[in-house]
Length: 331
Image (cartoon, rainbow, N blue to C red; front, top):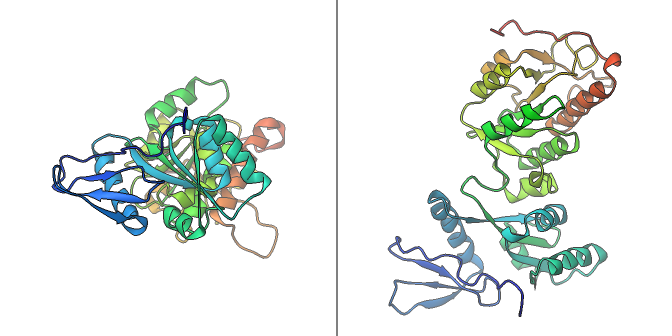
């Protein structure tokens, strides 16, 4: 352990609570001391209780603006965090049953960052991840009061307007499935979007499942939560950014819509599509031309198609439509 960051040590002591909780290092998350200061504390096995306590820590510490503990899982997500923000990694767990090249690379990366890796069984990993989709790797990380991967919308917008390339944003209107959310963020990163923007209410959270599906994209692509998506659209429009809503039944398509300027794509909910006010505030509604028998695409696939089409149009502007299809509601 010499020269390495200690595991947990004391993560937090909540003196304001009538029953402070102290998480201590006893071979990873093995024990939790519960009790009042000065009283004898009972040591309890922590597998089930630790998850409840960690949830309480998240809520209370996050509300006070102190670093809270979140979890990420999967090789891409964990590796990206180790590469870009290693100091935020509090604890790293790996499957004791897995010994392969992929894990060896992650262990080498952890070694470079001075982090210990704790090998645990599948049951413990499932409990830590609250899922069995962890690929044998789970990390507990510090996150700001804003949450894992979240960024300030105004700051991100200001930075995008200073770049030479025209801005491109992705707005997700109440996406519910965390797998879809993560996949959309992954596509946003792949095709160079400046940020992903979500409404604070009614959207899937940036959970461990979403972060895994994003495959580390939240480390490089800002994710912004806004109080009102329609107001966010109006802010983008005021900066000269054309807002396009993905819609199935409309005359404008990716084939006849100019996509070379500053653009924000708005993708609707998996079942209901765009909400009425969101749809009405878009500058244009644009469809993806469907060539086969199926009538629609999954929202994450549709997102990838729209973002790719935008970058393709910018690379070859002579091959796309000459004008935007302007929505009647644009003031």
